[in-house]
Image 1 (cartoon, rainbow, N blue to C red):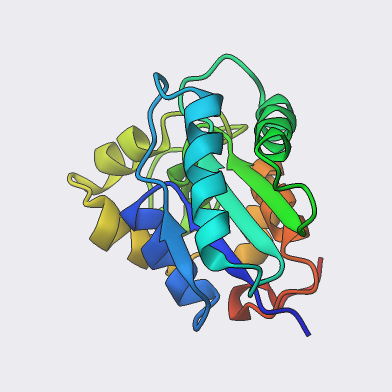
Image 2 (spheres, rainbow, N blue to C red):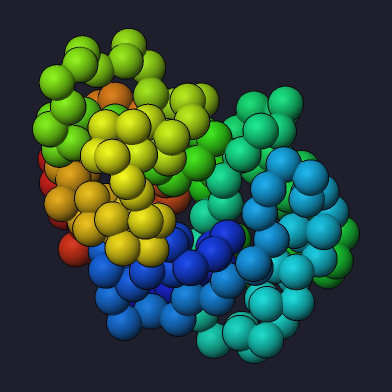
Length: 183
């Protein structure tokens, strides 16, 4: 049986993971934004992995693509390579990148927002938090974002967001209540 630990960007991701995969350790990098290099993220993640002291597996990393030019798959490859360069390649490390931001996974279940306008054709790569704020009138990442995510239908998000699908796929074998749906 797995005993996962999560490493995420910030507070919003930590609160969401705490709701959908409760009881597992979650560490924050507190490094997000387009100006943060993959190397800086890898350095912080490597330090956090060392602090977990080989007690958890898999280690699931969830970061945002933000405004980086690289696509999610390229970011995953670069991040994994940099982590391995730090001597941490012998563990089950799984990386997921939200395409642009985690809020894009929320808007992938468009009906949950109660919007009057038609759903965008694709939700990955958009400015999800701006869209949510426009639709709701205001938006608090650590309150509204967490509630909206937890209320969303993971099956709908899985069908509509390629980056969320990859996130769910990296959770294979991990017991998370949010992932108990037909894929």
